[in-house]
View 1: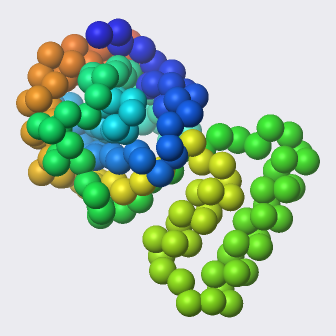
View 2: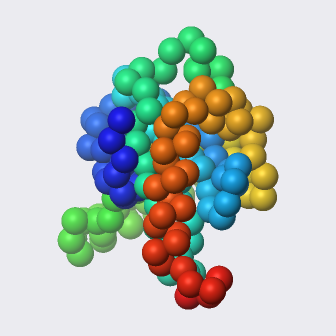
Length: 181
């Protein structure tokens, strides 16, 4: 298992060329220490684990790794089919023309949904498709706690949990002194 910067892991997700709406996620507070844990899963890509913390209001730092090459029968039920929320991974527009085209397309999607009966799920999927999101789906997330499935995932990937915790603690220790930065 190779520990890398959390943004490198997200880049792997973006470049995976997997079915974008096949992703699922579980996230919440870390079991020990500051920051958050996030697990991303896709049947064709496996399971990724990220550990992050906000260094300051403008900068997030963290580490991550691919912890499984596939989503097996033991892990699959720990990821939501429907979650307490939804997530999406976005890429910035390539240039000004791309940004204007996406903004125009997005306005058309919003207008179409405003004029017709729709569901929140359908709107979300259409927005993600319009923005060419490489990964999106249901997410079980708790802002100030840990979802039930997260502890089971941490126990399943115990070796990765220990290694990533140590790496994140080293990152926090080298960047934070006296509790303030």
